[in-house]
Length: 193
Ligand code: ITT
Ligand code: NA
Image (cartoon, rainbow, N blue to C red; front, side, top):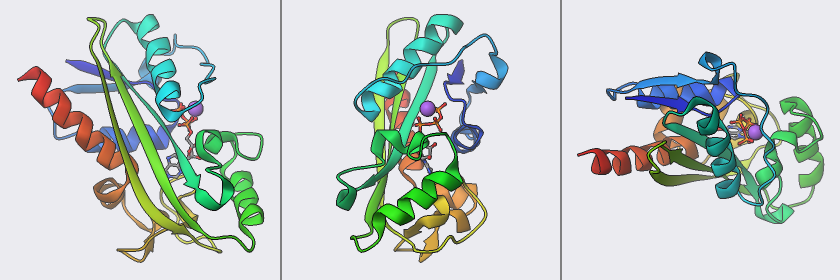
């Protein structure tokens, strides 16, 4: 079997590939399918956007795909950046997004969580969804050089590390994405057995 990761984000692709490396499936990504054009993520939830991405890619490649829609949810910011996480400050620019987050959070509660929703679709009409979250606290200063997006500002209380101070394996063990992948693999295992 081949599964195509319906993402343009190289960091997501590496994390998902790494988490799936122990399984006997061929994992490819949009790097291997240049014919897929830009996708208009105009849904109102992580679930909707993940399905929009998965459908758009499956239409072109006609193979099983998995899409990841994810983001940082801050209660004291009414759930923002949420589904707007990639373009919170306007462009897809991690540094600008993090500066905006620091400005918006001045004087506010810094509890937050990351959420990932995965949608798997196959040309035969199978659909599976999985999700994962991880709770944390937004730091006032960046820590660590790994990861991407909001990782340097996201403290995972149990480990006292920021997400950017973890290796890909460490991050996958506790992250929103790692948990969602684990749940999806369990569902696929059951469906395929
Ligand atoms: P694709 O849609 O092509 O998959 P994307 O980066 O645009 O790539 P999203 O639309 O799901 O993906 O936006 C997710 C944004 O949320 C991402 O760009 C980061 O800013 C943030 N984010 C998601 N997961 C993260 C993680 O594990 N660590 C840090 N930031 C994350
Ligand atoms: Na996106």
